[in-house]
Image (cartoon, rainbow, N blue to C red; front, side, top):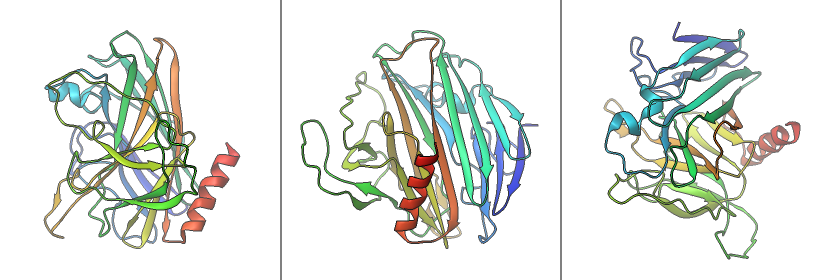
Length: 296
């Protein structure tokens, strides 16, 4: 089976590999569908997915789409662990020789947890870093924005003003797309002649705490991370294509995990918790994040 449906408390999730099945197109792995009992439709574009492992990048100029989207097309193994948990295993990929395991687990009443692990099997990252990218193709929300706590930052910036709620809604694809953490001083290098990408295009905004949220109908979707190191937030106003019926675009609410100074055969990874629930005050979302981090 390339996919399964998990149901617990308020959530129903369809988790699958990168194969096609009915309306779902090949090349999109992760959460094929996520619904809340109070909602009327999936959070994600039905043909695509959310929390889709999309890119592995090393700074080389890439023109071949099969390499650019290697996690989408390289073989994956699907394994159901329990009634509430599944794992996607991707053996070492053809170009980047990265092996990975992604575990999804529903947690009552409205959480979907993600645990990612990876191992580089060969030295094919000549610039000394491994770049990984996940995309979530949102199903035509009225508000395309991502929201997070932000503040001044960057190398040499000593301003530690209190964090403020910050809105990110980029005007175009690949335009000021990626938000770094306030203390993120990592400067990635790229070969000349490569295509424009979301992960190359940096926003002047900075986040302070590693989470974001967005609105979908009467629901809120929040994505929280167990660390700031290596985590960058990314937005596209149109990454999920067009919803002709609603006459709007499907935005992409994305993120990256960067591994600088990597070693082969060493395991790296992170944990994330996503939340889907009826809309609530921002203070409650901040409390959700703090409770989860304290419990780790």
